[in-house]
Image (cartoon, rainbow, N blue to C red; front, side, top):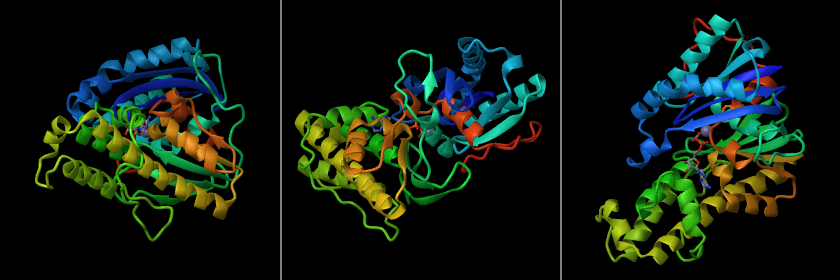
Length: 348
Ligand code: KG4
Ligand code: ZN
């Protein structure tokens, strides 16, 4: 079964063809990230406009890379939410139109759940991918960490899963992006904070880990504020100093220490919760997913401290892509949606 996946929830316009949920025949991603960098975050209107410009060429490229004709496509899977409303609408309206004109079933996918399915893609002829040899075994624990979400999942099967815990405020990727802004590092913050942290001392600044009622919930907004206060203190100012002045006052070494201390605390928060969940739920595999799953320190620490085999997607499949959307639609055995009616759900 060949599924064409379409993803436009944020600033990536993506299309991919995946066979039987596991063989990735193509994976095309066009990002408008460069257009947003100047603003230090995604500008929804710019993202939506750029989806309109590139979605058709991206889909055509995904079909041609996979040497697939429309006759060979069995279904179209599209991200229905969560995400930016204008961005989601471009993907969903395109998928609806194609579903009607090409007479294909339309499958509506939850973007956050789909991230985990990047780990089910085990086969490709495309160059430059490092894929897991085998798909995850159930029961499985999942850590989905991105710019919009941070959650721990427990899967008994593809159809039977629950959220053990999630962030009560900022997502961990969002905290990376905000800390990058405080330190004057380029957007997106994840990779730039991680790079800067390599030269810093992770123990230089003591930062708090929030204690919450549910041990699987997270809170990252306090951590981001603690980084801001620590930075203001380091330069000898108080909380009234505007954060925009900080990058000019902090030395390279101070930025590196703050980045390393932030990263160590954020990762410790995630790893601690996963170690606890492993003891309680005794999974047969643990899967990592979402943009923050690209972080090599997070991967290293999880692999080191968990006894269960850890699956991590290729870096290119951690951040937003449509191969995970097609794979999720296949494994979750979604019912087809009405192509005349399917709406977007920004807060899904
Ligand atoms: O999954 P994704 O592409 O989009 C969302 O669904 O949110 O995740 C993007 C997030 C951004 O916040 C970005 O800063 C973060 O993933 N990220 C990283 C790394 N690469 C991307 N965070 C930490 N370390 C990285 N290497
Ligand atoms: Zn995502």
